[in-house]
Image 1 (cartoon, rainbow, N blue to C red):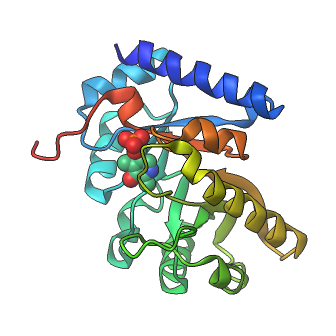
Image 2: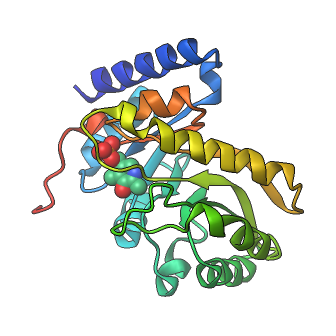
Length: 230
Ligand SMILES: *Cc1c(COP(=O)(O)O)cnc(C)c1O
């Protein structure tokens, strides 16, 4: 079941790459496993998934301990500064940096472990009240400040698009995030890489890939609907 779902998502990514004239190797699928039990993650792992996304610190740490060690864990949810210390040495990429305060805390904990932590800057492209992330207008100044932290490495940008029935409605936001990343790349800021664009979820990942996503975060499309009561 999960295996079939992943195959279908992969085929859709391949199709979107063909449409956009991109190479499928440019796109990495992150299996968003929040709320799902270890057995389901293992099924995805056995199929070949090595990138998993979680949005809660405690759950990420638990699954990190239970699952094989060759997995790349992605922190995709809002991160409180007081919880950075629990995950800083366990994650491959933190997608949700939207303040200097948070970046400074990551830098401090990374220094303690003598590592450099890869991060994305979360941009609220659609400027939805309910969402975290900084605005496009404020992105450049935040990036300039975060770039000065020696134990943090900006690898690109992330956005969560609005929930829509018709994925085409989100194309404008994916385009905007890509344009912003090109703008920032052209600034040639020291210690800033702009190679990653984390955008697209179950409802809109094909459109996101057509607009340049390099990481897509798919939960429901792989593991089925979530039940937050559990
Ligand atoms: C839950 C979540 C996803 C996956 O959402 P689906 O619609 O289930 O694919 C992707 N990104 C973030 C940040 C999430 O919190």
